[in-house]
Image (cartoon, rainbow, N blue to C red; front, side, top):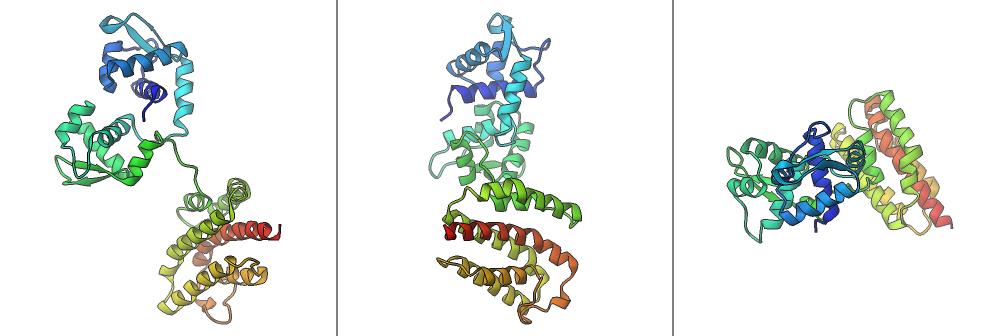
Length: 306
């Protein structure tokens, strides 16, 4: 449910995106129409912004003027750091879709343009951005695309576009993305020693097991394309054995160490993987995930010892 604070955020976002900072301002009437607020929504948002000295100006209606204060710029900039990085128009379109679409129903482009009050050109840009974030699915793409909100999109609106905290495995994938370089590995190791390790320490045993499962999945996606069919089977088996061992009430640290070494190509586990055929690049690709797995496993063993 959109509340007064969220309406104020939308008002401040529009003013910032349009550069409405003194001496450049906008009339309250134009501001209300541009955002598509009802009188009640606009009055509440404007009152919040004026009382907080986030917006200043004089007069009302067509004869008035409003502009962002330096405090307003700082306020909205800080607020947006924790929100999804989509444009205000994209947020407005998605909110409108979820509010108006009923079961087994959809809205035409004309209905969306009329309801949200944006241009057809801007609507096409919004469609692409929402699709890139997996907030909508586009059907009948072309001159008149239609949109259907996804589960991810509905959840984004439900939490008022606040960003979800990244899990360690998601952070790992974001950090280690691109060419294999010493700098990437160093950056990944630094992250593990700081944010990732800190996050892991707060997870429950069930969440730690889930992190291991997700990290192994990402590792397999990254590595198995470089392996032969036989090597892929052996590698997948090692991953399965690791998952089985960490599910034990008292996991064997020695066995876990050997399995991690095998998954990182630091050991061939008795010839299961032909180490001589592995390139340095493949070893480096595996290393970030092995380091992350090692951190999670250490936390699991510490919890088990308590």
